[in-house]
Structures are given as structure tokens and as C-alpha cells.
Image 1: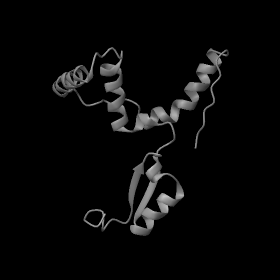
Image 2: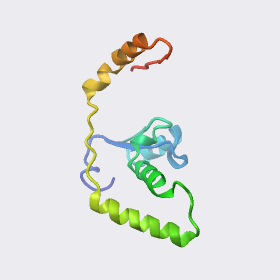
Image 3: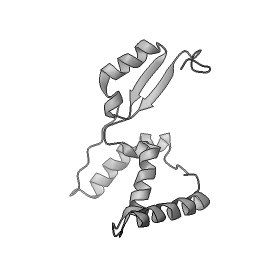
Amino acid sequence: MSQEPYAGAKRVICIVRNGSSHRGKKAADRLTTAFPNAVMVHTPIHASWLNNVEISFSVVRRKVAQPNDFTGLAQVRDRLRYFQNRYNTTAQPFRWKFTTSDLADLPARLDRHTTDHPEQSFVALTA
């Protein structure tokens, strides 16, 4: 924060998850006190899908750690290394297809779905 481009920025938005080290108003106040141009924004609770590290851990859990049939730590290490090497050679960037227009249309789509399937109920919250 003390170096450019952050030091000279009118506002720097820091997006953080709701971890114990930066949860709540006190954490946001500490950041703003140290850096008046910084604004802390928390991701929604239970929104791990927004955190790339958690996405990676989720992939490892599903592709490597389950089922948990390891006979020892060496087998865990070997499976993790094999997966990492294979993933690094085959991984491709995610191609996000959900647009702001899709987001704007989401409540109407949910309403249509509820009309078509009255046995299922949805609540759509919009800001």
C-alpha cells in the first residue's frame, strides 16, 4: 500500500473473505486507519466459490483425496505430486460464461422455473 500504484490511488478496494483475521468492522477500521484510501469489502459468507485458493483445494479434494484409501503418507505425497504435474500440463483458463446480463435476468429465470415447477420454491434476493 505504500508503493505505487496503491499509494497514489484515490481508493483501493481490498476484497477479503470472512476469515477470523479480517472479519468485521474492527478489521476494516484497522485497515482504513493504516491506509485511508483502502476500503475492505468482504465476500459473502459461504461463498468459497469466489476464492481461487478454495477452488483449487476443492479440486484437489475431489480429484486426489477422495476416496481416502491411502496406505500411508508417502502414497498421499505421490498422488499429490502426480496430480500437480498432470494438472500443470493440462490446465486451461476458466471461460466464464455468466455475464452481467445473465445476472440481471436471473430473478426472471427463477420466477419462470417456479411457475413451471410449482413443487419447488425459490427465493430470489436482489439488491
